[in-house]
Length: 100
View 1 (cartoon, rainbow, N blue to C red):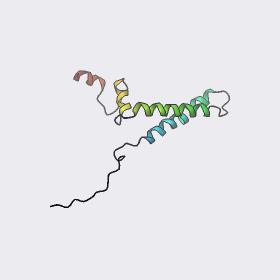
View 2: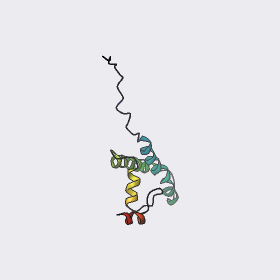
View 3: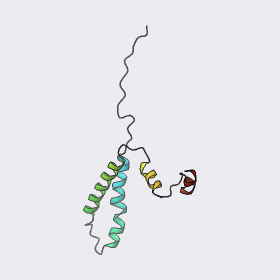
View 4: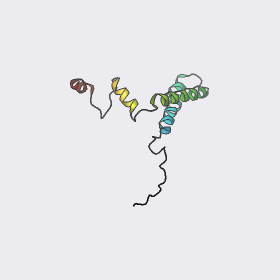
């Protein structure tokens, strides 16, 4: 008879994708990239927009997390493709229509 060997349990988070980087990038995009046109369009760029951009960044990161929670990687990219956004590497819409 074979002797049973006790193995160490595999952690439950081993297959869980790490999405904190994506969420941080959404916040950073809103906070830093959208800040440029806002500062350029205001007459007095005194830094008063920082609070608003922080709030908008947090809300957009939260909405992104809620929209993509439980979805496969690339969900937003494929959603944009279905809406007509050209995505390099995917079949163009003209060919896609011929296949259907």
